[in-house]
Image (cartoon, rainbow over the protein chains, first blue to last red):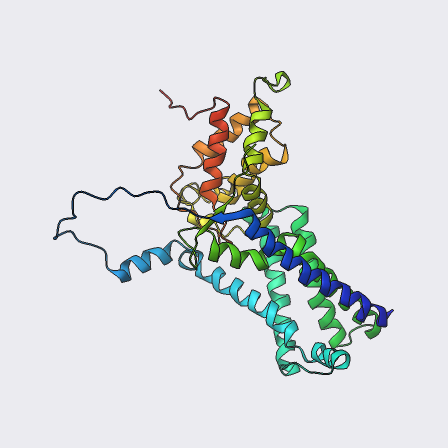
Length: 226
Length: 126
């Protein structure tokens, strides 16, 4: 069983993950088009010279105030840390990289086990925090559906089982298999569920025309003529 | 032309608008992580004792999201409730902010367009 989930099943999960991500990127560009600015009518009157314009700093401050960072800095910082840990922890985990070395003969850089152990603990603490928000904060509960709880389990199961396996709190072999299976399930789910925001966060915020765009923002969604 | 079962609501017409904007609607609805971080960006939410009904994501899910889920097959009563959401719970000030980049005002505006196509407009009290 262990050899199967670690070998062919892992390969299938990684293939679905990477191909799924490529498909979503392709889908984004096929569903959007370049934005054509409308023709501007030149202004006939010039602005008076004594007109007070807000300074660049004031404009920047006002712009930031409208974002999550300006309105809810605590949550903005916490969610950013959570997402960074979620990506860094499994990639730089020593045990994962030893498995890569066993299979392909090279070992990617790893963080000390004590650090990744703390990271996993922090991720699980975030999990408890997010779950409590879903359960007890009225505004979050109002828009929560069953799928949110399912995705919550999909995302946190690999970390909980990995933590339990590492500390050998129960049957190591079973926990290890559960950890690998839950990790593979998460990989498969990312491109085809709401977790696809991993890709669309960047695509939307960089390419879609918006006031809060991080990048050029020169694309808009296509309309299909009936 | 009008679907009599739905009390004068032309479901086919709604469906056509939904189909035309399918890419935007489908991606926006499936992307929403239900994080509720858009809440504070709505001044109506802040001024109504943080009532979740005024949260931008809640408004989208229960208006355009509902229409999309029902494929436009809604009755007058449901359209009236959508009208309440898109006109009385949103002033389209375009200040709502989604961390994932979902264009909430655009979706509200599209829902208003669908309402108008069915002869449902904002009405003043007097």
